[in-house]
Picture 1 (cartoon, one colour):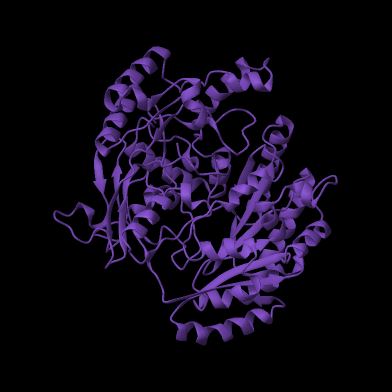
Picture 2: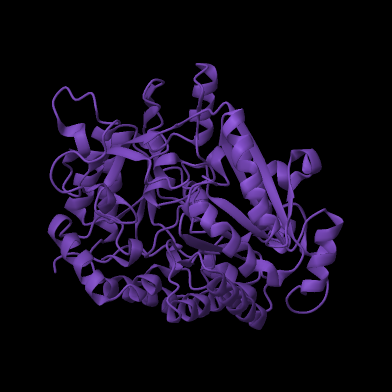
Length: 541
């Protein structure tokens, strides 16, 4: 193998920590980032000069002030392994190609971000030390929106807010599907990480169509129908001819996506949001058993969220408003606060879409099944003034808000948030077991069970927000240990993560088996022999 491997990166990180072993926490945080293996100070200086020649002085960052935003992360990093050594922000695909070729020459690894707002998963920080952030925020053009086909073609720096503003300005009646922090997030970045939203178009990669990718050697490839001369179907037909490769560029380090096509949802004539309120934590299995057949049959067409009360409360409250005792907040305290806010211990949000007639026909079927689970089925009539209902009703029609950033303030202004997202079949017994295991592990470390379930067609995403005070080194270390225990013990039950943050990419990758890792390594070595693109991304070196 001629590229950079995991051992080399971890060796550099360990050496850097050893050199700083005598420093206090704040002093270590100010220590200079470690350069990547095989990159000297002199060659790094030459690389910066060449990159400035491509993008201009203002768009290359290598000093502490310029890198401040790139170092910021909500996830635990007690050993300071995830600190970039520099950043560069190109404005065109040609500039990306030039940067990649310079990086190849100097063997400088690049960590690509779209807007760098992957909050709770590492933001813009790299998986391994010594990487330079390739920030695509300036590539922010909306290249095409086709109102007839309901498609869009965008660059990676485009945000959901920017795309929504475009639709509004041009009076195009199409809906986006957004993650919870849509205004600042990138559709390209979220799709490449296989993120989800809350309309019937909630599986973002399913509704992606066509990519332009800069390969590790600097060449540009267009997938699907995009490589055809004079093609008019790039955003209309996903598959093209021969092997389908788009998936290889999701959650990987095999290329840099510089354009992406996506399908948008036509605005339906009728949209009706609902909430089902269940009073007890133990109701979780009954909810899933009631919801699964409705999702499999697409009677409920959207990804729906079964929100735990503590998660809901954390959006708009501080922990001290709910619990001031030792250890994890008790179910009794959470239940009391939830009831005061017209919430249950589980609050499940879904919507019906279609015509007035079709929604009216389906609603009684859905109501009957969900009422039988012991829940109260509520609509805007009963819950219209409730901020949590409003939040989810907005998301389920592709609307934008930043309410869930409030989670990071749960324990004060420390801003510690790490998402743990194991997947399981949509079966009640597995849901109950997952809930019990999560509460056990979090309780062991004194953290709260602030969690939700996203119910897909046949699967559950158990979305656990590990909330901690990142300004407290001891608590950050405890959060890191807790997170790793959750990954390990959930994995032992067959519940591996579908997505993870930079601190745990190796740990999660190991759960998918050595054959998978060897195959990824084989591909990586074939297309990126110098290991330039994002070494360590998804555990791939």
